[in-house]
Image (cartoon, rainbow, N blue to C red; front, side, top):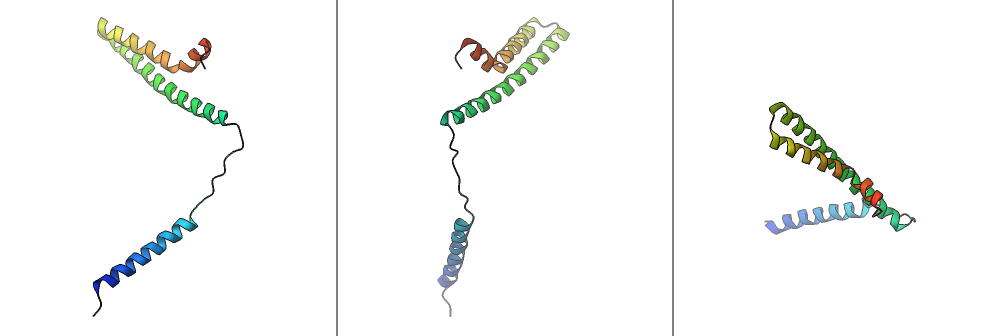
Length: 105
């Protein structure tokens, strides 16, 4: 009569072996570039500003839609909200260029 723990032990050893083989055989070596670390920061900054620009363009589009709907419905409060959204989207979309013109970036 076999003990139930021997079957569990065999399954555990089998899984442990497969995991060990996977960890040792499926690894890759990551080589760091020999460049300047500032370029990495600049690339990250460019990526973040491009994401912010995409969000700004979406807000800008939504502001245009709001202004168009307010002109159709003759609603002054919706029109002012639309223009605020439109100009806010413009500022967000061109944030990097505005900061570069100021001299901060």
